[in-house]
Image 1 (spheres, rainbow, N blue to C red):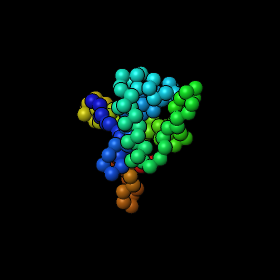
Image 2 (cartoon, rainbow, N blue to C red):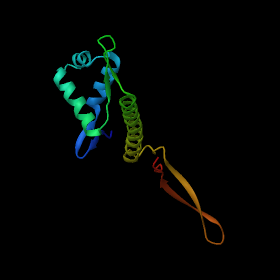
Image 3 (tube, helix red, strand yellow):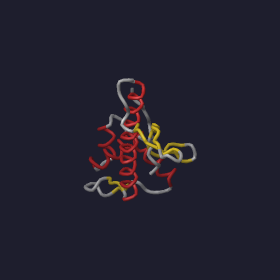
Image 4 (cartoon, one colour):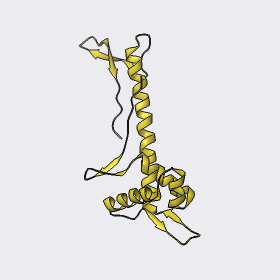
Length: 142
């Protein structure tokens, strides 16, 4: 069993960043050219330009810089930071969902116990006898 997810960032109900733009930004960073990045991703220059400009307009910041023919196109510090944060977000979400998937599968499979189901002992009453309680640990939000 596996939990699936798709993450994107919206502003006013419109996409500003997601997996497709992540790929585009990675290709721009690697190729130093929007045209080369578009070719690498098998998309038209016009489509790549449109997505890039839509994100810049919706966010109100420049995400790439165009230089001379030798310098080509590079990500701005904001564009690079947006890409890095999004990649990190995807990794963290994927790791967390993978762990929860394992735990849910273990709950369903009677022969296994999930990693985070632990027996906890609680004190009850004047004699301090112990009773066993099981608790499913859910990590606090970061």
